[in-house]
Image 1: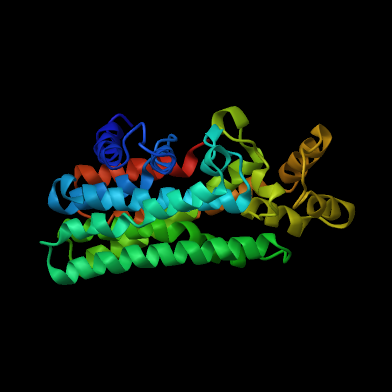
Image 2: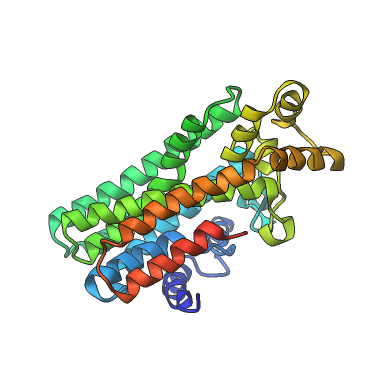
Length: 326
């Protein structure tokens, strides 16, 4: 997607101005590093494209895009702390590089700049500005609650697919839905079109997270830039794992449950056996089907958006995110 570079560069230049490299202090450097570890800027791009779909240009939504990237980067720093992750996209996590205390403060530093970015819309209609603040706040609240539910599921209870989908709806989908709706608001969309944009982001977010969780079990470590089975080691359940567990019985089920919350590396034969059970029970295919269901819903919603180049790019981005391998 060659067109994507323009949108990403527009956001990156603003982020680099906020947190230049090198940082003057370890805290500022940690925040800058959190923003420069190869992220795809999905949330930012969604905000820009939905603004462009309704106004014909994306630049009015740049502060909004920056705000959502700051919130996302903050959440990732905390996620790595909670998961005790040593790496993030092939490099050391912020906690591993700077220590947990600095990582927490860096996360706060990123998050507390979010309202300052939104406040740049002080000349926007007051009702629209209030809606944007509400969307940003709700996205941050839902992400926090979703992270807690993720911990709860990993902590003991096996959970169901319904539990899992409710968790990722909060943890991931809201932080894709809100940029879409906010971008449409900045672009001057009607209430109906703003709601449509939000629903698109929610469906896309579900597909995105199911695909992401599947990659933890079947992805390539070199391509992903992180070890596979990280979620499994942390006791986290995905659609792939839950489907497989529901179809296994006896020793196979005990074997899978025994892999959860394990410290230390997995043996080669354990990895091979789990992948074999996933293949035997069609669990990856099932997860791919769920991804396509959500992706199809997102595409259907897009059919009601203005017929513009931005809509075509949203369609292309949707297909890419649903089928990505990293």
